Image (tube, rainbow over all chains, first blue to last red; front, side):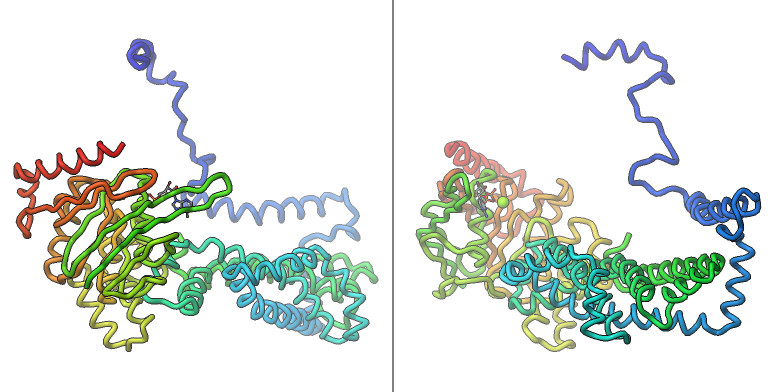
Amino acid sequence: MITESAAPTTSQREPQDNQKSLRPSLFWRLGKPIPIRLDWALRTASVIVPLILWWALSSSGIVNPKFLPSPIDVMGAFGRLWAEGLFFDDLSASIFRVGSGFLLAAVLSIPLGISMGAFAAVRSLLEPIMGIVRYMPAPAFIPLLIIYLGLDEAPKIALIFIGVIFFNTLMIMDAVKFVPQHLLEATYTLGGSRRQTLMQVITPYVVPNIIDTFRINMAAAWNLVVVAELIAANEGLGKRIEIAQRFFRTDEIFAYLIILGVIGFLVDLSLRVLLKATCKWAVD
Amino acid sequence: MHLEVSGLHKQFATPQETIQALKDVNLHVEQGEFVCVVGASGSGKSTLLRLIAGLEMPTTGWIEVDGERVIGPGADRGMVFQDYTLYPWMTVQKNVEFGLKLQGIGKQERKEQASYYLGMVGLVEFAQSLPKQLSGGMKQRVAIARALTSQPKILLMDEPFGALDVQTKENMQQFMLELWERTGTSILMITHDVREAVFLSQRIYVMTARPGTVRAEIAVNLDKSRTRQTRELPQFKTYQDEVTAQLLVST
Ligand SMILES: Nc1ncnc2c1ncn2[C@@H]1O[C@H](COP(=O)(O)OP(=O)(O)O)[C@@H](O)[C@H]1O
Ligand SMILES: [Mg+2]
C-alpha cells in the first residue's frame, strides 16, 4: 500500500533531480579501490609534495638555514657522511641491535602468543602480568638495563626485546582467538589430535597475522634503538644524531632522519612482499 | 556399521536459563542407509549431530557406533558442515589429503587416495586451486571428498546444501545419491528441507522444537535410484505431505 501511494510522485520527477540515490564518486567510495594510475599519482604526490614544500620554505629565506637546511644541503651531508665512512658502521650497528633484539622477541612470541590464544589456562596465567608490564614504557628500563648489563650491546638488544615481546605476543594471541571454531572441529572429526590441530591448523592459519604483527612492531623496535643510542652508545644512527646536535649540524640530523624513514619503509615493504609470497590465500 | 542413539538428553546452561536442546532422543542408522533428520530451526538438529560427532557430550543418554561408546570426535564419524570449513591455505588436493596426513599415512598413498575421491566428486582439474577460487557447491564437494577420504563408518552432514541456490542444490542432491550408491557409505543428514529429505533418504526422523524430540519416523519406500522425475511421482508428494504434516503437528 505504501509503495502504491508513493508511485505517482516518483514518476512525476525528472530523472536528474533524483536526490534519494547515492551519487557515484571516484574519490570517496567507501572501502573501494581507486584506479591504479590515480593510486600511483597520489602515492608519488605523497612524497613529492612535502619535498617541494620543504625546498620552497628553505629557499624562501624565511627560516634561518641553520635551523632548516635545504634539500641540497642535506644531499651534501649525505655525501660527506658517506665519504667519512662512519655511515656504514652506524647503520650496521643499529641494524644489528634491532635485528637481534627483534629476532629474539619474535622467536619467543610465536609459541607464547599461540599457546596463550589456544589455551585459556596459559592465558589466565600470563595475560595479567603482560598487560601490566606492557604499559611500562620500555625506555624507562634503560637505566636498569645499563646497571644490570653494562654499556655494551646487551642492554640495547634487551631494550628492543622488552619493547617488542609483549606487543608481539598479545597480538598473536588475539589472532589465534579468531581461528574459526569449525575449522578446529573439522580437524577433530578427521581424526586430528589436539597437538596436530595446534601445529597444523591453528599455526598456519595465523601466519599472515604473525607477519603483520612483526611488520607493525618493527616500527617500535626502530624507535627504541634510536632512544637507546641517544642515551648510551659509541656508534649507531641515534648516537650520530646526538653528535650532530652537539655540533649544530641540522643537515646531518635531517640526513639521518631520512635514512631511518627509508630503512623502516623498506623493512615494511619487504614484510609485505613476504606476506604476498607466502600467504597467497590470505591476500586480496 | 550400526549407530545407536539412546535416551539422549542435552541441556545448555546459559547465564539466563537452562536450555533443553534435546529430550529423550532415540534413533539408529544401519549399514549403508541414508537417513535424514528434519525439523524446524532451533529443534536441536545440529546439537544432535554434534553429539554423534563427539563434539559435545550428552547430559544423559548414550551414543554407540558398532557397540562402542562415543566419548569424543574421531575419524570413524566424518562430518560435513554447512559452511564448508575448508582449510583456506591448503589447495583442494591438500584439503582432501589432510585426514590421511593426520593419520600418518605416507605421501604417495595420500595422493592416490585423494585423487580417487577428487575424481569421484568431479574436481580433478581443481586439485591445485585454493578454496577461495571455488563456488559454494564445489567447496561443499571438496568437504565431502575430504570427509570420505578418511573412510568413515558414517558420514554426518549438517544442512550441507542449505547455503546453495536451488539449481546447485538439486544438482548436489543428485550427486550425493550417486556418491552414496558408489561408496555404500552410511549417511546421517540433517536438513530443514522436506523435499530434500524425501528425495535422499530411506528413512526420515521428524523432530519437534523446544525441547527437541523425535516426533515421527517415516520410511521412504521409493526406488533406490532416484532422478529428477522421482520428484514428480505421486508417492513422492505423499511422503512430502506426510513429513510436512508431522512437522506442523509439532508446532
Ligand atoms: N553451545 C550452546 N549453548 C547454548 N545454547 C545452545 C548451544 N548450542 C545450541 N544451543 C541452543 O539449543 C537449541 C537447538 O540448537 P541447534 O541444535 O543449533 O538447532 P537446529 O540445528 O535444529 O537449528 C537452540 O535453542 C540453541 O539456541
Ligand atoms: Mg543447525
